[in-house]
Amino acid sequence: MKKKKWVCLALSVMMVVSVILSGCGKKSDGGKTKEGKEAAGNELAGNPAAEAGNVLRYICTAPPGVFNGILYTATYDQYICDMVFNRLLNYDSETMDFKPELAESWEVDEENNTVTMHIRKGVQIHNDLGELTAEDVAFTLQMLCCPEYDGPRYSNFANIVGAAEYKSKTADTITGITLYTKAPEDPLDVVYSDEEEDPYKITLEFAPFTTSNLHAMTGYILPRAYYDVDSYDEFVALNLKPVGTGPMVFNQYVIDQYVELDKNENYWDGAPKLDKVIYQCVSDDARIATMQSGAADICEVRNVDEDLVQIDEMNFVTVDSVQGNTFAFIRFRMDQELMQDIRIRQALAYAFDRAGFVESYTGGRSTLTYAPAPKDAGAYPSEDEGMYPYDPDKAAELLDEAGWKLNESDGYRYKDGKKLTLNYTGISENKNDSMKTAVMIENYKAVGIELIATFYDWATYMDTVRTDDKTHIYGYAWSMSPDNYQNAVLFQKGSLLNDGQYDNPEYDTLLEEARVELDVDKSNELYKQCFHILNEDVPVIYMNDYTTPWVINNRVKNVIVSTFLPWTYNIKNIEIVQ
Image 1: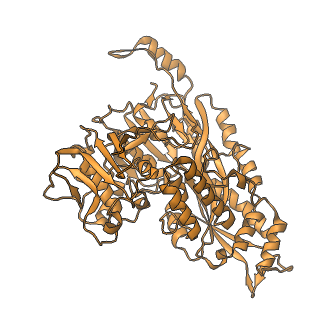
Image 2: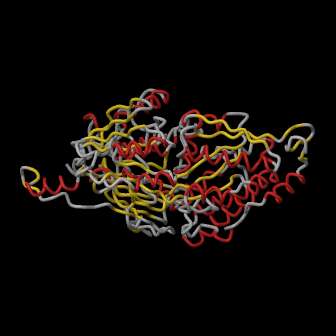
Image 3: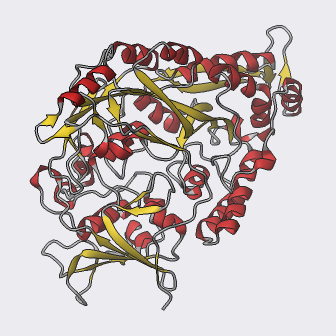
């Protein structure tokens, strides 16, 4: 039998990681020594946050409030999930190799397409709900595969043997999930093996196993003792009251104001150094002023020049910039009749001065991108760089060809008596969106297209772009994964992340081939072909990747900011100088 320990997986991406570290003075059994207190005092001299206590305050856009490890879609919600829940596997912050978290060890049997996980003993669930075992892992996977599940992550586990049949209600058991213990009185819909008694062991069988399956193991695990309720509606109702095994315990969410989390005194890896974390809901425009006043400790700058000018004047913060994992793009609703004409989509790409906007908005700290992948990834189609340059004449030519003729009297284009009007849906609290849309309106008017922009709060926006029958175009940003499939699935037919309803059988076929290909170079080449198809089809207008400046008050130590990992990654070890 071909069997090996899968401790590391070579990734085709380069990682930029910055760790902010410094000492906090000498300590004794009674706390800091006199020398330590003086050192801290000197370091915090003139710092408006010096008296804020052992509480970390992060400011950002209000989270939608889907604090569920398998249901969230917004990055803002993920920050909360990352502190409340644990993952089976995590990534090493420097190498991006897999490392143990809840799974203390694991084996991959490629010949038999199985992965066996050995769950860490002694992991306590919040609120005194007992110890986490392999059953909680099986429960989480069962929820992901249940017919009612409407979140975005079923595709990560759809190739578990029996998952598709369970999802479609043609089977009562997910035969590819095996627990090694006697079935309890209320068993899960999985296989219970009596060959050994080990409540911390679980085996997953895939058809076939892919590298994406290990990446999927970096998802969060939900404790059955809390989330195994009578109906799916009751399960969803727990979104605002999450319970996990992570380093922080959820306290409360005062909607649109703040989220409060407390340290987990019983955390399996040792209690966090922080007493609390407060996620403060602050608009983009108010972030810098909030940092300036000392009312916050950490924020992400949205690449606006004037923000960095103000930050330069603060002598009590550190600015740490990394290659962000987020890329921005403009998405077309392909189920709208106008968007089904590729000539209109191409014209929209040519008519928008993307490069000019990105240069002015980010001050040269960001560049255009041409795929949902990092530019140094093996799957990135570098040969596509430069497609659809700003060329209003080419845009006008394509619109003429599509039958949309310019009316000289009002400057707009008409076809069969109908004006070429497109509706853009954006996010009200996103400064990038409003500034970008203003340029788009001007650029598109120059070639005869009327663009009408409407902005909503985040939660309304997410619902509107999926269901509104008037939306043609909307702004979007995506946090890229080290797993190319998780980025490419944005455009796969049937994916819940395919909000734009893009449908190309050639793309889907190549994507599936890339997903199951275990040879990294071959897989990269297949993904590159997928991304080239997207550039030819134009279901999106790619904008830019981000160099993300993080502003961190100097009283805060041990924050890891990284391309692919959330700022909460090292939350257990973050500490406050007092």
